[in-house]
Image (cartoon, rainbow, N blue to C red; front, side, top):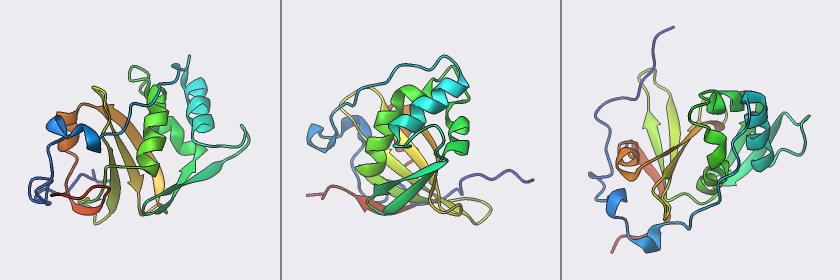
Amino acid sequence: MPCTHELKGQQTWLDYGLPDLRSLDRALRSCAVAQVPTGKDITDAVEIVASNLGFADSASSQTRIVSPLGEVLIQRVTLVHIVEKRQDARERYVKFALDTLTGPLEIWRVAYSDGSARLAFVGAYETKRQMLVVVNIQAGNLLWNFMQTDAKALNKHRHGELLYKRYQLL
């Protein structure tokens, strides 16, 4: 199976004349959200993420979250992909991911080499760490991944077609 990667040459935040996340006005940042405790293993981490994303119980296979662009499907089976790198302990940031899905700073449609596209939800916070949430459009707006990062690195994910921003430029 060929490796799929983001297409080069897409418009960036600079082309749109958007603010740099490293110096973003505090008024545009969201308040920090509490981290949750780290899971002891992958199974525990999946349950932490599932319960914080609104799964009714351990038997629930999916749930939906309403974003500014409509519903995002979250399937329990895909949560393993998010938390499998245990050194990152991404489950700690699940509340940031949920907040970013429901109230993102920006949403970008990013094109990939195989003709597909994903949505990149950008969350800017009054903390050192920021949030990127990736949604797979082809799979029915399926939550694919989320990761915490610093502002400089998050700027690199602000490319493609800007579909949504929650602020107006002066």
